[in-house]
Length: 284
Image (cartoon, rainbow, N blue to C red):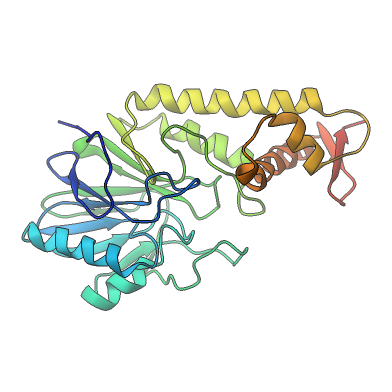
């Protein structure tokens, strides 16, 4: 049985399935929604997925939730190393000594440099206890070191920033690649899912339909970009304004990153060309 609450309150555990609880960090905002979701899997030997930002209040809430259920932290799993998802891992390790699973990237200005996994993730890696079994699925796109975690027993896919509730995710070059993102979304369709557990927001129902809709949305955005691009040089800023009309100014930087990822894809496919100085046009 899967159920979600009507309201996410930071620090208050929400039971989503018989084996899964959600504790949300107090870092809500325009890019993080209600805050970063940390998921607790199991009751005795607990897997912590995405421990969240460097926030003592949130770390205390995670440990209190685990101990209130009579458990201990068995392991810490990180979908990717952006600063709203992984910095609390080091704080949890200091408190409980549990091993970390994750993958690292060279710094691009967005990475949590404090994260040091004990086990480097790879596609298909599975860890099991008497209560749960988690399988890592490499899903590059948002960034190259992004992994989703499949919990088949309860029909949940923990997706970090691979998908978001109510909006699309940002693809951040150079480690974010649009073609990889589309492929990774298609890969998800091969797994049995009853719901998607995102890094921000509520559970996503009808998971296979939502994945297909997300693919369709990204391809529609790419078609619009192709319509707005001409045979004259256009800057990334001009193209972003043309493709994202009426966009909240606070989101302009992030929209331009995703558009850059689309442009990189079109260049790789010989459908567009760049002068190497932030200008693009249709391939001649």
